Length: 582
Image (cartoon, rainbow, N blue to C red):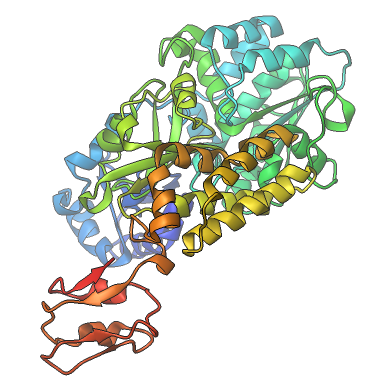
């Protein structure tokens, strides 16, 4: 019998290590023969800590939200008596979170121990690279990727085969393959989960890509804020070298390939290829003018190909199963599957992998379970700070590169921030613009100064100080920033503002002309009052952190508006619906 505990970052953050320690303790004290093991994140982050118990016959029972105080009951029932504890197991509804997905990139995440290469090999790992280097030419590998229709999963959606082919055809014998693992979008954690849960799939994908383009060295550029991912990558690389999957003369083919890790400082601008290369070379991460493209002159002025984690993690599956099998999923122009990180006002937050072309409604409601507290769905931000807001009336939009781009958003790396009726779209645009303004490298005047001016306008509007002409000025600045910026950061920074103006212009107008926040979110534009429904229970006054609420027991209470900091604690604490916010 084996007890497998999810120990990705989400599991660890919710106490998985303490849960594991309690299982070890209980098993030792009761002298049981069960083995405790680890795995990565299976994607159902909202159910962590997750424990899978495998019986001797291979049957698996999944337990969710398992904290140390729950362990004894599970051990006594399942490990001692052999009877699964149904009340602690995953529900049929939550099972559908995984069952409705098509997992290619996440095929091993939450299934294998990421620190044991033998489990990856048992799952078919390193079979694809053996096939490639012993029986395929570089051109045949690139052709298979072309047939698959795989496009870059880092945001731009550029055909992967074309980049590989361009690097292959560039003159020179010294070439580099770089994996961009600098996942910087707020709310995005797709790459991190792959690195923590199935690092060997990335390594195998990189080896295949290196073979195809003629590179002998790979570099993983990973943000230093991902210590667990880096730790597991280092373990995986050491194991792969020991097994002969990295290093000299792979499978006796004469092909040499090795990989190293570069920990980056977490600059969002380093998602741009040339800025990433500058950082790799020890310079400040700033983009340069293209051409020449990295495929011709990249790292140390040598031909270089850059793909992100998800793109490369697809590669072993494609080469093992054939490009046609991957291309059979998705749509005509957006083939295969895509991993999305569901976050925000969603009931079931976590990672989902679905075929391209699935409607947004199916992702948010069919898999994600809908909106928290059954509130009204308002919008979803796709593509992170570089993306845009898609409103509720476009919820049936197919999730693929072409249709999402038509809305003004982008698929991006796969972040989905779900918003409900309490989200102020002006404030949401302000949040994302504040992020891109801080992350601008400052090289381009329009990006450096223009985003600052746009942010100042948005801050004024959310503070109730908006004035006539602000909307038009925002639109003018947005166009000039997009046109006047060198790299993708500046060119896409205005997108959240432009899409919220397109779909939620009335909220901007209400803020400016009516001094009212429709979502009742912006503190400067709302007011808390106590109605006659007040029973005088005094709970609101006790919860108020600044003593702004006064009144006698069983008497009418009032809020001193000069003292009120609009924290909302009174509204949360009132059991009689006596607090209003306008």
